[in-house]
Image (tube, rainbow, N blue to C red; front, side, top):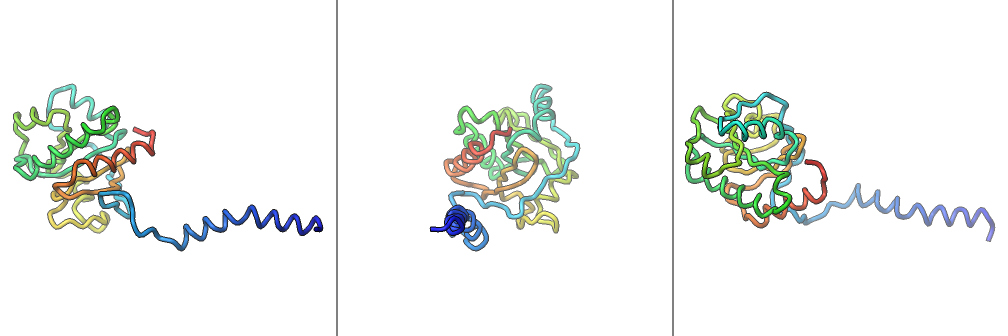
Length: 198
């Protein structure tokens, strides 16, 4: 076997994985995924903006202002009245975060209050640790409302969902208003395991 033939065979041998992976990437779409929530494509980026934190005590406010952008978020929007459906979302987020165990400090629960009503003190106490934002005029609401730039369709302007947001403000996944807590937690466990950020 000539040196040239050996060179060609070695080149072909080492190029097969590269060519194969490129073909799979370009032409093969997986039919199933392991995620429970709906992955948003493209993701929606929440704009950098000054947020109005509803007073829950100086410590909570300081933590929120310092860490909101550097954490993974479980995010909802709703009225400050936060009736039964809203409280169900709050419960789901709280329980899902608790199941994360030692990873739970990487995740914040956030409520965008989309009206002029402040949540009651009893509600703030019941769901202590949740960050409440007075967001009636905040641009984040437009991103969750299914506008032209949002690519998120929601017949109730975002109130029917729980959203997952990464550490740089990308809304990457959403769930219905009453998701399976274990399966939602499993999604967050996967992204937290894959990323050391936050």
